[in-house]
Length: 549
Image 1: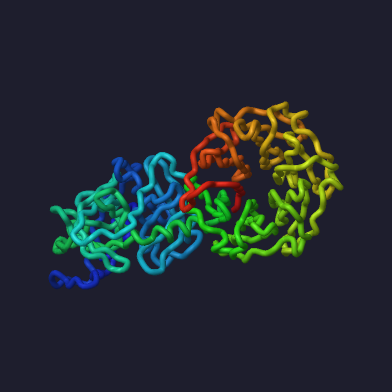
Image 2: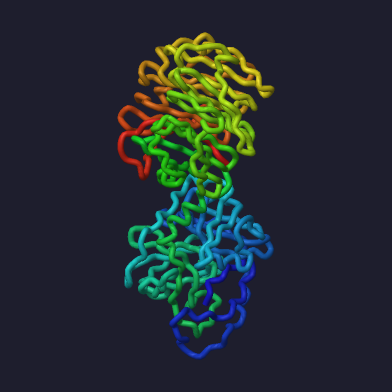
């Protein structure tokens, strides 16, 4: 019998019997059992959770008066897996057709998006917030062998309760897995899967998710025909869905941190998702075309797209786009459309509206171009002609701040700043030290805009010290603050800052070949974590991050 959603107030009438494939009826019986007897209405309390199955969610579908209940399984801090059959004909991709709530622990979340599978009884549910007090279940990478011990959990009815207020579990043994399903046999007296358990987890002996509750005979469940004694079940396999889950999360609309990092002549791209987890890192040239190796690169988000500018080993400046759907456009030579530059050493890029602004350092000078929304490039212009001359420039960075392009550079160990107004006029270079305080010799610089403020981070003393300042919207500067307390005692070889969802994010590649990632929150506090670049080995070089939607 299909494991149906549970009605929240009155006991439901079970649907017609569905025989699991290959399992004959145990005895003659009607095709549809009579309706379950009514039970007293009562208010459901918030679910209580045993620690090992805290990732099991209670899901309610529909309006309060007619809400149906199912179970779900937390697989990321903002995503659940559940049974597609819980939603019936309404299990279409996108916004749910009816209100859907998910309760984990003492908190209830709204489901904002459905992403169903087409080949099995599985759907991903996106939550409207991050679950911070419960760890997601780990996804198994292989199906269990035949006769393996597994545990099923859920929020459905039991032998004695229509609407239990806690997660319950049952032990099963597995049959040999089919392509998309896993047959379960009860491993104990009275162990069964009941209505409302659909979408709940089936975990192996190490606590990894191998399947979701999908169908069951429901023998012994409250309200089931007493003549039904079968307690087996059919679960939907999840062990082979790891890539699909990650791909769905990656392509979903919402703020993400896109990162590119250089290793040797190779450039890798990865994504920090909304819940703080990172994807693996993939070779950009494999996706966008081999340009013969990459010296350094920069990334800029335009809506959901990620623009990547790369200085190739042959000295040309190349451009590609990772589209919001995950596909890549081929690399194209920027010099062919914006004017060729020689002796390129640095590149930085940022979006302002749908325009991409690119700043490149060539022969120690700073040049600027714009790619508009239609793909047209302006010719590179020397900033010395509009902002004044500088000495030899060794680093440059860009930011969008209140609709203005702001550019910072390093020359002769000093940091300089200029901006391009919304009308296209440039201000003269200003010495940052005169506004934010003196430091040791500056060796690296990055900038990001948050609202009307420009956040500038510099590395000094050969990268051994890092400092942060803010150029406020009123053009005043905050004094430099030492970041050692947040980043630790690191030597930064390369770093990059970006605005992501109203916060400043900063990454740094260190001299001991590690990557540090830190976030400055809206309240001024910082959170720092190391970043493991899954899929990248060898000595790291330049890094660049950007925010996308």
